[in-house]
Image (cartoon, rainbow, N blue to C red; front, side, top):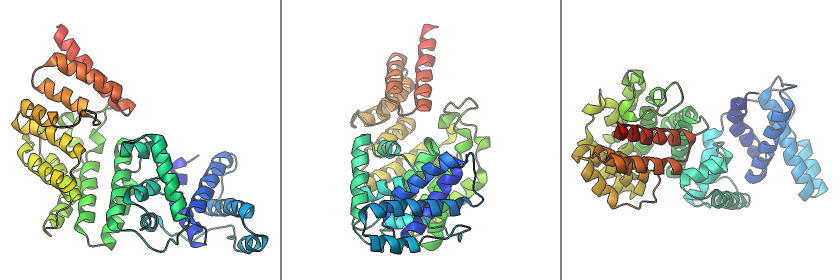
Length: 381
């Protein structure tokens, strides 16, 4: 069973149902039911036309639900509209669905959550992790968003900023999470950049290209994480780096700085350094200052503390870290790293072990556990 194929077809099938008159919430439920049916049936009886099968199955699921709530006259009318089995036209509705989910009736955070769940294919748990909220809270937020869009006409697309936020989160989940969505996020952002002349769209595309260029070196052959400073830079995709820098420079030249351009500038400085020692940390701190001004994000300030520690020494980094809430994700890991740089191996080992217990995924936990073990071994020699 090719689950990647099912995931790639989901937005198209969902778009077909919405265009045929299904309200968004009911259409999404019908598509999810059709996917479950495909997982059950296809291994033994794979269809010749996967998309046509899913469209037909999803429409029938939608009709079944409609029959339970609608009058017979309306029900029979919709039955007559059932699509014929067989090949269906190839139309990529994914980006359009991103805009429709960013409906003006929704708050930006609800629109992002709904799009990630309905179109991006992320689980509620993954979205909750991205937002740093409990899974139950995110489930309620998504349910409210579904109820809201089920009562409005999906003919008022949302704004670009919300769609960019969704694409950014999809890329991040694909880059570091359990589901590989990074390439799809880049594809959609390319489409958006071709359709909209907007420096922040270009900034996000540049950011994705620069991060994706390093992907092959981020994990070792055993699946363990490789920190940026230890990565084999010969494995970086220099073509993607050059394209990302070119796109970024063109965006910055328009003098309309936004957060994605600032993030891309930081990524470009990392990508431009031939070795970790040659990284221009002073400029990176300056860009983090710009990014903090634009976003006022505590996560940005946490990353800035690391950069300060590299540019001005670990004690300066620890001083910047002390001003932040220690409940922030990765705060303990950053403290461990800066204490190690400062030579306090006892504190660093303890903090690495504590950070490992708080880690959000297995790869991160294993990496932090190895860091603690490494320092404990050095102390015992």
